[in-house]
Image 1: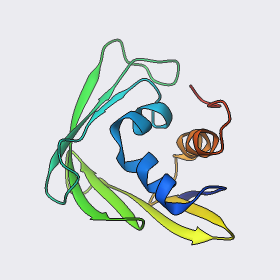
Image 2: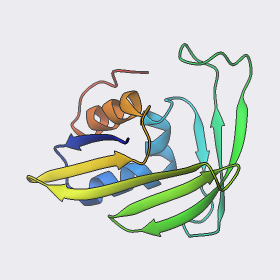
Image 3: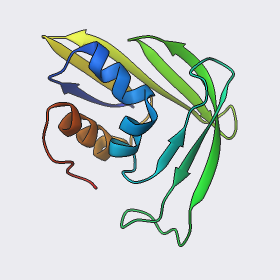
Length: 126
């Protein structure tokens, strides 16, 4: 099972939105922060999940992620703590837009936010 969505945007714009710190903070758990010192396989990055209406957190939860693969305009994947928990985002040009997929279910709200961000609409799941 995967989560995927078609976005009316060019693959370069989508790639930037899934790999650039400020863009990620707008659509992936909005308000949470990303620190990506170097976009390359084997590098560490930090995702800090902020308490919000969609989680039960009472304080910030920083997570160290390890980048597994970076293939421009194709795949961005990273391990969440342990290698068994791989999050992979893949892109494919389709029908004058871009299809974006996560390798597991449960990312529908994040994908809806990404689509809204790239198509110039308000974020549906702030």
